[in-house]
Image 1 (spheres, rainbow, N blue to C red):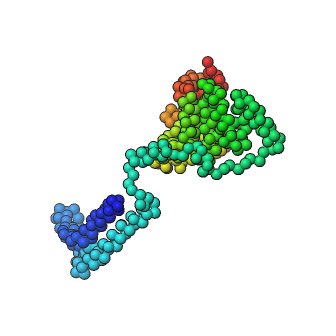
Image 2: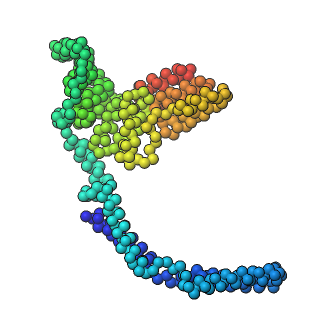
Image 3: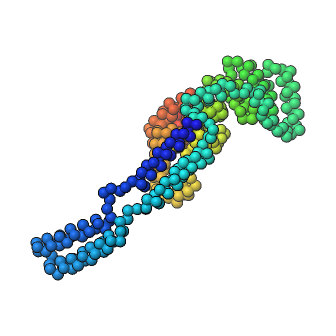
Length: 406
């Protein structure tokens, strides 16, 4: 109710200003013709002064006087007709006031009714954050989510594959402590669409691995639970993701699903930051990069980011660039490559980028014969991706290609 009262008062205030402007008596205003008369009379005096100084001749002075006199007569005629141009009549102004008020108040209410949240109370940022934490703390468990989720369609398995899967289940059931068997069972149950059986086997893999359980083990465990819940990230899946990120903070799939969890619990702002960073660090061929790019624009809007960089597509030369390069001379092509390398180097230095982009820059510098610069970029990339084993392998492979590997 407070919101509507405030809107109504603001509309009244604006209408009052407009009404004052429409109805106020324009003191000090005068018809345009009266101003013109003063100017023309001043011009006549100026003609006489110029004639006395000898600036103009008598014939020119007479011709100017005639023209000015004609204009004075026209302005005087306009004055007699009352052509003051003072604006609309008072009656028109009075009728206009309620129309303006109706447009302002009615338009504002109609716009809010269309794009606003009618009936909801004001929700400041602190209340939104508290609500997000409450949603995250009290959201449904894995089992509850599985009951609500639409059961996945049973996969149409090849007869031989179904027979092998049945044998695998029997073998693992007889040997529950066989780590390799549990890993195979988790993989094939998931491939068959039996996500619940898949994450049950994966949970056994983690138990058997003990302290040797890797980030990949926990990330796969979380993904199987998320698939079983129809894409919902439960508290149990969140815990598995947390374990994966604790072992490898740069693990791509875990970071992707962590962002999904933040979106589902009302924190798109945090999810956007994580996804942008993940996208910049991830290999271009990584399967989760496509999923992030498909959703990053909408997520940016929900996060209130309106100057977001274009991350909807991987960077690289377009077809037009490649066609133009084919028609260039060797010297022009070399200049173009150097320009693209410099542009990529500047962007990585200011905005960062994926490991493939750093690797491409290192390899390109090696081709251009700029070994020292390639070494400097390689050392910088090692610092940027410290702790990210997969990224470091890509960077080192590029250094080997550039001939600067140590």
